[in-house]
Amino acid sequence: MSEEPRGTRATEAFFGRRKGKALRPQQAAQLEGRLPELKLDLGTAAPDPLAMLFPVPVSRLRLEIGFGGGEHLIHRAVSEPETGFIGIEPFVNSMAKLLGHIDEAGARNIRLYDDDATQVLDWLPAASIDQIDLLYPDPWPKRKHWKRRFVSKVNLDRFARVLKPGGLFCFASDIDTYVNWTLLHCRDHADFVWTAKAAPDWLTPFENWPSTRYEAKARREGRSSAYLTFQRR
Image 1: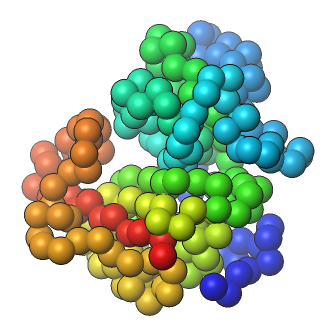
Image 2 (image 1 turned 90 degrees about the vertical axis):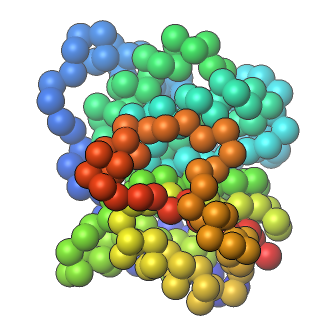
Image 3 (image 1 turned 180 degrees about the horizontal axis):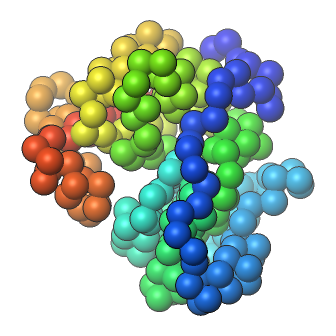
């Protein structure tokens, strides 16, 4: 695998605005008080083993890039307490919403980061993650913005570096051009193989999949979703 120098993004920002409407006082307080407790400290070396990030024992490690409203992340964290989750989301309002859900659910197997996911990918040790989830990412639909799509050669290199052999990259989208884009990029990457054998494999939601607001919106607007799983060779 050809590897970009660590710390090199080699593309533009993958996300747009950082903040929406004003936060409620409770949300602002959670951001100020709880986020620092759960946020990864990229200024220090990652612990060895990486599972030491979590205050509870975990046997698997999973990274979700751009968790949006946090429905999927919370669902997985509660239903899979033996897995440690790292959730990344630069949008302030989404982060504030998730923090409230974490406390409500009592989940102790979640760590967070509120900026560019490539910073976390470059910080993580090699072969340390069992699964990466990229679910309904910003499709950047205009052709001139396609270079901002998170799936790219340089980021697939990053995925390949941090995933354990046999680890999974799971991608979901309702945008046909982005689904095709991802299939082509992974097809052309030596370190990934698409696991699908028949159409139901990519048309059926992932196991134990919770419906998200993005998925519901897509269905209301007449768009179906694709669920792609790629395995690290």
